[in-house]
Image (cartoon, rainbow, N blue to C red; front, side, top):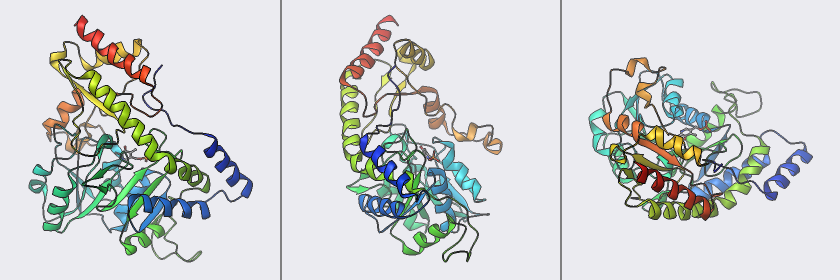
Length: 362
Ligand SMILES: *Cc1c(COP(=O)(O)O)cnc(C)c1O
């Protein structure tokens, strides 16, 4: 089976973890600090705060910006549930704006219509590894005095106009095993704002600055030294991983060109291909789910990110009457194909040939 995702862990990670185990310092400590420093440098920001996962990074970032009850936060309905759930966790209200058909990212041209007197922040999600149109989003945020918290959980190393994602506003990253780099579970908040970094640091550790003196309400959202040790190794390999993803993506883009009913990804800006997501449209002659079944038979694992936009989720009943047609259509058509750095050229050929074979049968 060609898997849809596969973390690449080598001898470096194993040795680094062993060294932490031998040190006996398993919880947050020096390794975490080292990882934070290296990650901040990589993103091009002054501060980074490591967290237990991407969801807690978003949660803590919202709290650090004092977003809560009565505040509206604008985001996309076409994302992993964590983006919207984090907004709810702090008691704020998610407000959805439909996506751009080509990029699957929040459509900045629809953004201003959604802004009200209660809007406090925008969470653009750099979906599938491609940056949102940050120039437009930042311009609108400045005009309306809104905070920008980037959900960069799928876009480590991606950039927009040569500026890395996670450096436009407050950035949130995830290091889950399927992401472009991993720590097992883990997350990171990036910012140039010293005060936000200091608040986030307290929030992830029970509001504590001085030991057992708790200045504010907080949580245990800390990263372990074990995770950080893996993260340091993975960060060193990230550029190589992303280059391989791009190579794989270019191979697929070329090979899938011209198949009627298969819409290949639009690459408008630096894209680190967390996912290689095509649309299977009616013109293909077979449904998206049939295509997924056929590829599975051929030994190719695929995935649908995401089959249900957030406003259609059972856990979001108050949004069920709302309509975001571009997101809804995407949910019906998208299919993500393997593009991870462990993919071989041969795997790529198998994927391309399988889709071409199925099309000829249609
Ligand atoms: C993975 C992901 C998250 C959450 O990260 P976890 O580490 O799984 O908590 C949030 N938003 C997006 C877009 C993601 O892909």
